[in-house]
Image (cartoon, rainbow, N blue to C red; front, side):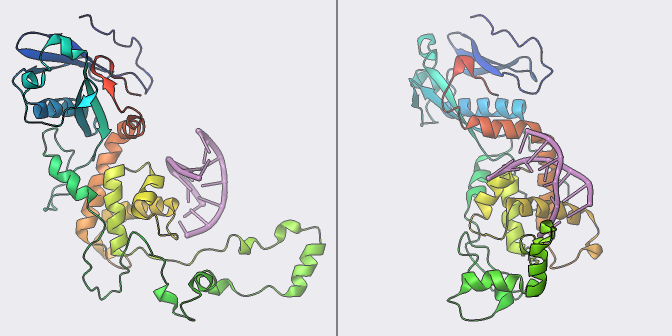
Length: 329
DNA sequence: ATTAGGG
DNA sequence: CCCTAAT
């Protein structure tokens, strides 16, 4: 079996990563992963190894290679091999003729380890071996399930109906929420412009000066609640700091007043907040626990920025890949 | 429409 | 939060 020649020039960012079968002998399956970062990474799996261990091995290799955790599935004849307990030979992956039908599915997985229960050391990137399974579940846990009465009137960040009403602006009845929401929010800017001026402005050449206050009225300030920060942090831990659109969709889809730009900005301030002394922080204090997670995620994504983005975005397309020629990017 | 950063 | 250049 001949090697797939490595790309000669590798100065650009997007280069092919090929994963191929090197050879198979009677008792082991040898795989070779090649990329611009790791010229040659060999994997050897005993025929008696389980499907689960194969998946894990490939996942670890990809993790080491790309810096992002990836879910790996094994395919045989195009069908997923679910039983992780079976050995390769039992599954029929050990024989050479079946290797042609062998393939892997790669799916993006959580790329950062949820913060441990201790908040002392700046958590570094998780080692390939770090238990990944249990992390997943915690990340996919619905946002806020139980709501403990909070004296600070912290609006529960529910996945929807979050815009129910502005407790800040208790006003008319509740049947005209939509209307009041808009008007009240900008109440301070309600000062109407004298009709006369409007006329004048309309007649005079200066059309441009038509108070863009109507369009660019500064939105009323709405400090992020702790629960909102929690949701933001959780989303960023999983999605990174370069996909605010997705963060918005995942954690604030039904919260109209939080745009992805707002989330991006909030993250910026959170990182800053986490860096300054607690004394200099203002507003509703953000639990140190969350700030620690902010720092951890910030550090993590700063390191895996280049990789994760591509992996996540491109991987979606790669549903099934032939083991002999897995190409990313 | 989004991303990314400075204002 | 806003404003925008660059995608």
